[in-house]
Image 1: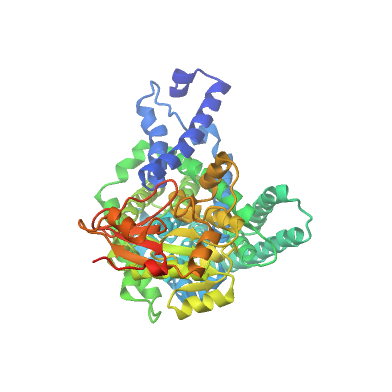
Image 2: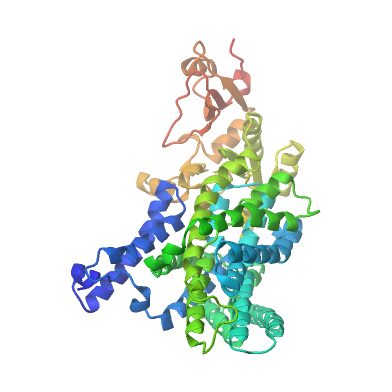
Length: 634
């Protein structure tokens, strides 16, 4: 009796329970990983490994709880995996804005060309001499590991918030390099097949295949993007069907390109996403949100399913040689690729070092390893004579070595990249700076006090005069709407950890807070209280959805405007045991509006309606006080 039958019975109910369990575990792992602040991939791989090979040890007949080959079948499994990877890369392409290339375009180009060649060659040599896998498997593994992991790098970048230039480079490389690595891997596989099957001219086949991949992938990707935008601009697709129709076009684009030229589909869908997000005529916000949710589900399921395919017997090959291979990949090959790609780039040695320590592998590497391993094993079985390049049994090493690379790189980079960025001065150790939505006179006075207290500030306003005056006052300011589509991607949020929405428009404040929840978290988005609120329950609901209420129940835009028009100023006051908060109130009166406190340990705390501040000795109070009451304590 199998493991599933033993627990759940047999028949269709067993399959249903297995599929349902995998979905629950996949999404649950993402949630748990977020709660405990560990990379979700590690938890997903652990679940897949336990549900697959480990569960065979508990089953009376050695049947795994989750066996994807039996559950789905290899004929269906890998097309489904390929489509899922295509959707993930399309979603990644939707985050690539061409404006980012102004400062970092040359480095990104070099990393995805010269850097890819360096990585592929050195990884091939390392695999050949360390893994004893033969030339064929070493070549394919080396080419395949050119990819990084956009699904891992993205969350890392959002968490670390490094300087804008290195963050942009890492994001672009992580997405663009995936179709490059997949193409190199499939061309290497095609070359091995050509040699083993006796087909002449493998090099010419590689060159022709590369040209066809670029031509077919580029043309079909651009055409699919144009078709989608053409229909959306003419309102031929209703709003509620835009996401499903776009999903249909992505799948069709990928399939058509892949049929014409193997693996050109990944390039096509990535380029399709880039073209669509860089046009200005159609809003894609709702489409991007749908694709982000779909990506989380696909990544979660794919990692569990692919990890479950690993066989226990293949893990015997993971000796010290495999560990040495991963070490060389991280400590030698990645730095060599980065430094070769950044010669005369203008990057500082700190930026180069950080990029050298940020190349985790993700779902694309896992998917390619699974597909290539099956293909090589079938090729080996079909050979009538002695193999030329294939070493017998070496294909079985592809999957376990690749998953070891994924686990080690995600773990090490995930735990150390953040501290390294802080040590190198590329990110703040605790980003407490403030993004101000508005640069009106009152907002500028508040921002100036925060800046003088030693924290980063950035102001965004659609009023050109406000922005000009802010810059004259040495306040960083950007002329843009806080609600515009590209503003979140274009702002340099290094050192910024919260949003204060201070515009005169309650709806803009609420929408701005809602949009920046993903970047800063719900606890760090704030807005002024609406001038006229409804029932308490309605306002509480708005607070949960659209930001915490700033500075107490009396603080509205009109209230602050009247205070500053009346001559009020923003003042910083240090509290001591002799001059405590009670004495502060006696000196400045109840009209003093506390905005922030800077604690004795250097943390900036925001005064809100739900958590009013109670400053103590050693804290510095930042408050709005009347001009005629602007006194300095003795």
